[in-house]
Length: 375
Image 1 (cartoon, rainbow, N blue to C red):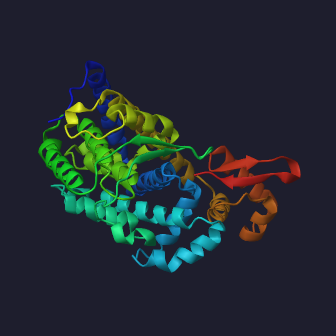
Image 2: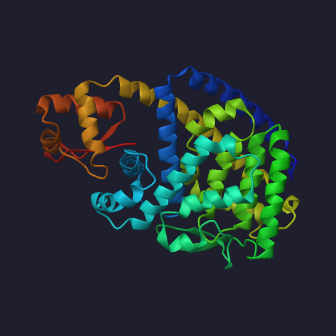
Image 3: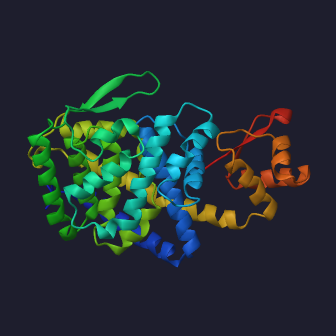
């Protein structure tokens, strides 16, 4: 059972959300397999981008989509090692750790999306395995990938603009305390999730308690947010199973990053507590319900973009492909002519269509006009 009792306001929000989930589920189920694949692709890219940027990585969603395309050409596990140097050179920035974090987060989320139903009952071995997936491409982390921490760590919030750091939470000490806390958390989860009327509440409690333990030396934030999705997919709720793979929860956490760290701190008062009933969950639950609601509505936006994408002319598709091959560039019409071999008037018409549909962003005026890809 849950370690807290939801108040009437939260229960009312949950009922409203459930109605929305059912409605959107019906729309997703009626979609073609191609459209559902597109929805999952959008959610994957947004979640990977956001969950890594929350931890101060720097790749944009546009760049991550390009990386995903490069790593999806053959589907082999060796693809990253083979293409890492090429990708870093193409991005032309010192972004090596960000790229490695993106590759790891992409791997973990892909496993969760495709294998969630094969993982119950959840075990510490599964969690350790997912953590190994997360850090597999970051060489300095090889020694502690999939291994509980051996050194004291903290939940830290960093201000990108000022470089200021703030301790959000003091987690468990390494060793017996961490091992005991993780064993108790997993046991609680396996005895709770299938009996819980509101899986969202179980997901919030599990994720928060996992973050409060902070069991690994690195990657706990990314792991916690990935496990949130895993729990929703394991809840035995067909409506959640149908919509969660299409939801970019982390995009909205990133947009509300300061509030995210604030509610984590408020729930714990800055320190781990052995008895989970000692945490204050109300603010945390309210935050996650708002994040879930916003991500749910994104599915409507993704569906509209899919419709627009399928209505593009052959020339517009060719111009769009030009931008996708140059993920970080602002491009002039003359450059598009070189890449596509299309007439200038055709390109200008395509640019107008693509800008109007939200695929491109126009920047500058007159001769200085450039266009940039929007994810």
